[in-house]
Image (cartoon, rainbow, N blue to C red; front, side, top):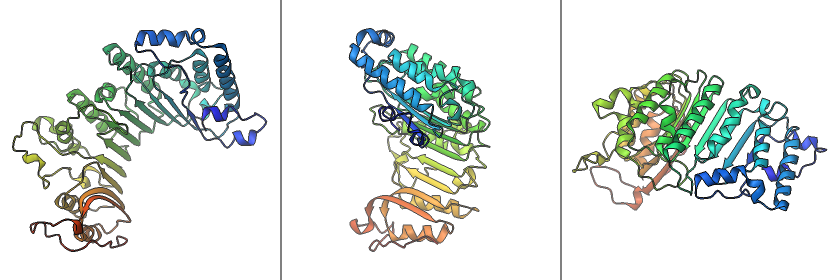
Length: 405
């Protein structure tokens, strides 16, 4: 339930309050932050003096009613807080901090999602760190670092955010079973992952990482160490080299692909190929073309080049596989299917992108992946729309074979 809607419910309607399971807090009506980070903080501390009295009174009434109603939401277990380039008013900070108190929703909270900028994240996180004793049931934590329109990228801001995140995970790591990290800048998540020893979560089963992988070698080492530390407990793993929001940051697909497949002997020990996840059930992996900036012949762009390590060795108990972003050639798909077919594969769900949709694709999937129950194929062209070379040996109209048996 959204915060403004929640505030309109009277406490007399306790049956309505008990039905609320999720709270979404996004105070877009707060004053925008000034372009200067320092001035932005001053605005945050002096919001009452900078807003007119009517608006301040309405905000105070809204937050007061919302705080009261939330105490009756006995089924509420999930909170999402979204704050971008807004100045944090004193009344809003007071309301937000009230959520983490013993007499509010904190004791029942299971999932917490925070979406904010580097400037505001430390102020949002600090009260949550201090409230560790009132949130004994917190299991899932999702953090999104959103780019600021103010362009604040100072080293001081980066260090402040990293310190805040480390403290957050330090106090909750023993309780967490699910972690999701998202940022268009690899250094935002790399700074946290490089402290993998402090980030060890003994009960972690789900990990998601959405970021643009750039040239930051310590980050790859930190990510590798984190995955190695949790290899025995992870059941769901998502690694996407594109966050869900648009950005103009240039990616380094070669380093990312090299980390996945380890074509460089120096990176071999830290690559994803060297990991084994004995309990992994779900794997979602964003693929990119392994373009080598020093390969002027662009040999690495061949559509038959290997792009994925052995999935059967990486995750022997895998039942759900999703491969996104890069459309795969028939040869690449065949290699992946052959790898799974030659093992005791338990794969039931497969999602991928194909360059060309053709009958032969469904033939190999249905004949080699006998346990497949769900198939989702996105494609660029159907075979009937394109004249295929004889070497591919793909001809004839496209037909859907129905269910895979």
